[in-house]
Image (cartoon, rainbow, N blue to C red; front, side, top):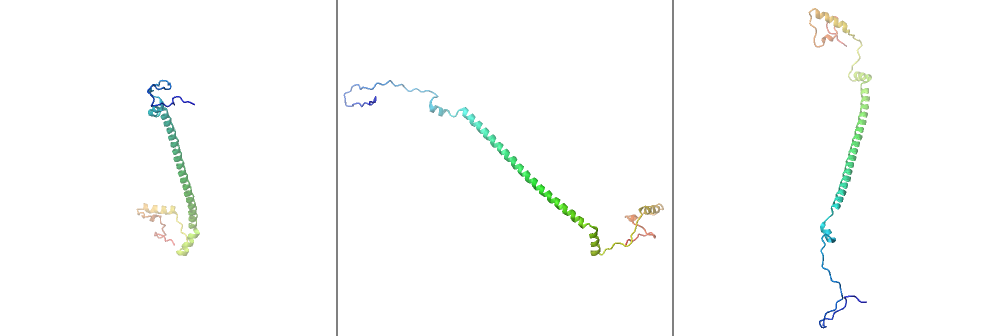
Length: 172
């Protein structure tokens, strides 16, 4: 098999025109502006690619913002629910305390207990006689006394019952 243009030339032979394999005449280099990989690399990124990247970044930012809003709303909801639970527990505690205090007040204010403490601890006894004051009769008798030029007693003495001699009655 023979390859064209692969024949060796004898350099010691007389100068004669060396036989060359016939080749087509070579063309000169042509420069085509804007063509080839190098031109595309120097040109940079296409505006369409930049627009697509910007759109993708905008969508990613929107998704992140929505996620953050959701997290903020969820945490606010959780904190409100915890506050509601704490308030409900405080209300239950206050109601239980109110019930206990009502029971204690009813026990402490019972007449039998008060009478027992008064007689045992302080030596108090119920009065044997009772005094009844008729305010209409007292007011009428004092009204007659003030019409006659007498001065009405001050400092609540008018409300005190008078005995038959005109002095204050002692209550036992």
